[in-house]
Every structure is written in C-alpha cells, then in structure tokens.
Image (cartoon, rainbow, N blue to C red; front, side, top):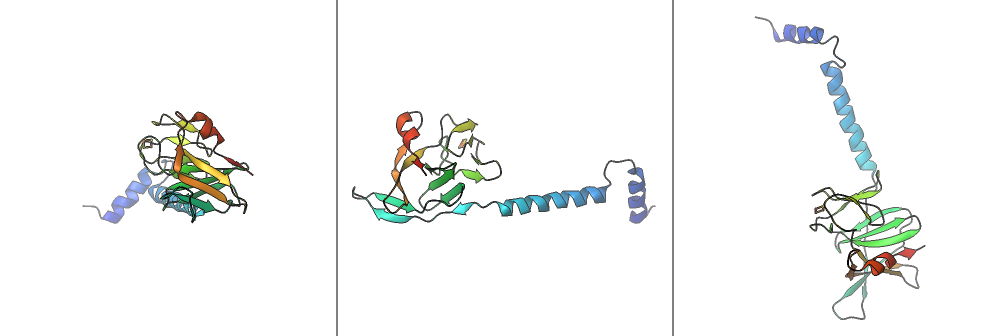
Length: 174
Ligand code: FES
C-alpha cells in the first residue's frame, strides 16, 4: 500500500507534461478569482439619492438629482430610477427590465445595462442590444430646472414601441 504522499508525488510526476500542474492551476484559479473581485470592487456603481419635489398634480412626486459629474449610472433603488450621464446627455430610466420587470444592472466595464434574468442588454441610452426584451429600456420624463438640477417624473414613463417621439425626446443635453 502506497502512502498518500507517494501517490501525490507519482501524480505530480505523471503530470510533468501537463500544461499546468495542479498546484499551479489552483494558484492561477485563485488569482483569477482575486482579480475578478478586484475588478468588481473597482466598479463605481453609484447610488443616487433624490430630493423629492412637490408636484402640481396632487399625489404625484417629482425627483430632483444633481447633474452627474461624470459618465456612468446612478441607481436610485428607493424610487426605482436609473439616471445615466453619457456623452453629454442625461437620461432617466425605470429600473425594471421592459421584458419581465427584473431590476437591471449596470456594467461599467462594458458600459451597458444587463438583465440578470434573461440577459437582455442595453446601451447607456437605453437602446436594446440583445436578449428576450422586445423594446428599449423605458425612459422617464426628464428636464433641467433653473437651479441646474435634473428633475425626473417617475410617474411619466415612455415606451419606445408606443411613445417613440416622447421616448426619443426624453433627454437632457448638457
Ligand atoms: S426580465 Fe429582463 S430579459 Fe427577461
């Protein structure tokens, strides 16, 4: 009967020609996991907090955000709003995927939105790229006020398939 140390030594010797010996493979696997974790940590998925403004329409609220200082996505989970600054334009989106209402995620590396449920993907301006969805992300009514803040109406939602002109116009140009 061979000891476990002998078995390991023989296994190592058998694998001299392997592209990667087990220890090296394990080391690289753990390094990859570490690298992925580092990349994930470096993704600035920002969270936004809105100031709630009174609306002219009773029972409705308007949300006010400072203009994002740099390109990226600011997610306001409490109000289910995504604010995006991209190439000198600002958009507001409903947080839900237009396919089956799953909360979308922002991938800063690929500069696109991804749905975790059926993997639909969207451009930063909400245009559909691929997946099961059948339209662009739903935009919310948006404007810039006199104090230079972005004002979003979370109750006024534009679908690209039903409100094409409003959807296209729902943008603040910086
Ligand atoms: S819920 Fe997003 S693609 Fe289906």
